[in-house]
Image 1 (cartoon, rainbow, N blue to C red):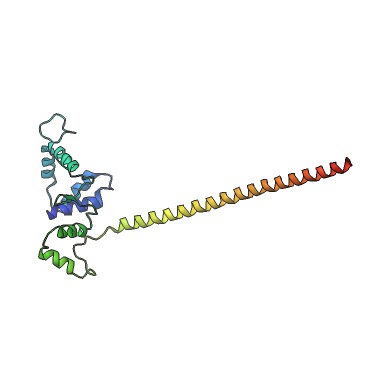
Image 2: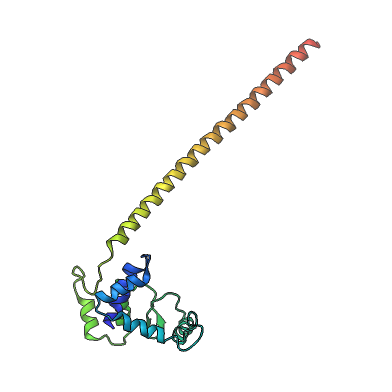
Length: 190
């Protein structure tokens, strides 16, 4: 089971964003000393003797049906006592804590885990620093874009205010001129 977790973790970290999933998968399996050809044959055999080997796979169809029944929307997912774990699978601490908390009486390993000093890493898989830098860069870009929009909006408001003020002044001057002309006309008729 550890090998599966190791593979899923490496695949998620390195292969999801790569352009060639099969080559990346092959490389990760080689790093874990897994036989890619044997696994590939197992995958191909799971399609059975159907003529429609691209879309019909009884094993995957069964898994998909079970995922729908268990309300699993992300893969891979973890079910603990019939409940789907909602959280990050990596680092694995969250899964381990949920698993330990599902016991009526915690096993000694769980007790030790919860009693350990959190300043030293436990079952933590180091986060990918590339992901962190991308998130920080995205956050900075979003903030800069928001500032840019704010500046544009302020500039728009200033223009609108000047335009409105010019219209108001023009209207007031027009009324004043009209009032003055009316006053002069009334003097002429006296």
